[in-house]
Image (tube, rainbow, N blue to C red; front, side, top):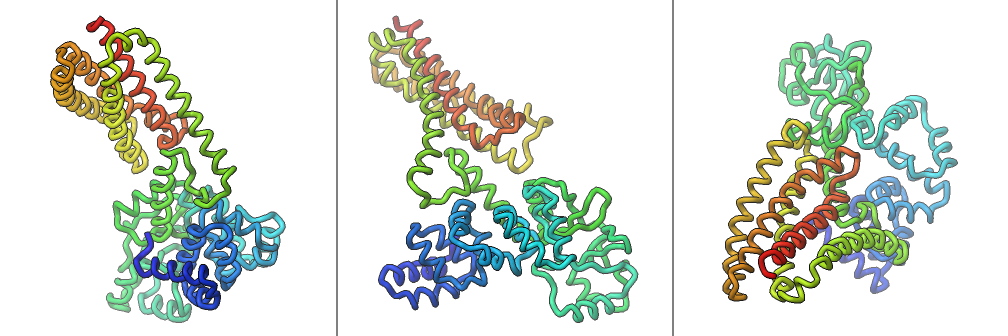
Length: 448
């Protein structure tokens, strides 16, 4: 989320562009951080976006392209020639370059690889061997390594010779002569401990390492649980490959949260907010069509009891209440379970306990609100049978809603489907069908 000062800068650029003060806009624009420029590009209509892109100091093109969403990035790269794309790859961290190369034309990728020295190309290939959603894909290879048998004074002299250290370096990684990970030496210890001590005497042997094959959400959990700033990444033989830093983890957290929220609405987290009308319409039409099918299923259930509704109009008045209460109750459970799955808190070992807990909550709430709506309906229509019908239907629907809220995301996850993508639609269909059927069936039995 942008700060107030960032918002003011972005507003100032927009006002300058709208008023024709191009020089002022250019001066402000090129004083922004690449992430702020990316935010401005994403929030600008296509015509203004092209103007902003042309006004930029293109020495930061690569960093800006990495910050914008995939659809915006593709649109911007279409306007760049091969030399500009090649220039955008210069100076990027290895992990960032690996992400960008996947989307560049093959000719540009070949030229970029050809212009790299052997060491840099080897490090890049090491990152690109791993999926981008794993620790290996997230890691950077900008590590500082030391041996355990040297003194802290030697380490300090070594760092002074390097003159700079990578960003977010809170620990220096200790390895043996074969590059096997041994532990870490914190910068604080290095600065404060006796310089005559050896690294082996001062290092932390228990500092956690992360397997290169670990999934991104597992990495997030490790950083959160242990309050890490950085962590070494190793292969199955405990050989050091690189490190992950907190800035990469923050990006993963943001992307996962956006992904979950937008998927629940059938949208993608890379969609351009100012994308052309027809492609956006086509993408959303598919989701709307799926929802239409589920609505037709619910309507089909209602049509089975058309005669009942015609004879007891009160059922038509109260019918939305049952479905709505079930939908809300189910959504609460569904959201909780999807979050638990994302954080790794829900598994096959505890799903039964979670299911029992949520059904218990659903039933307790159903008895409470079934009593309330039952009493109100009885007085409203001066018929206690209507109160009984809606009360029983609400108990049934809220119970099924709780059951579905737990089982639907777990089943989707098990078959490899993102629970956030289809969970809401399936849950709504279940609560609508169960709610309408139980209410109208009971109405037919008791009121006709």
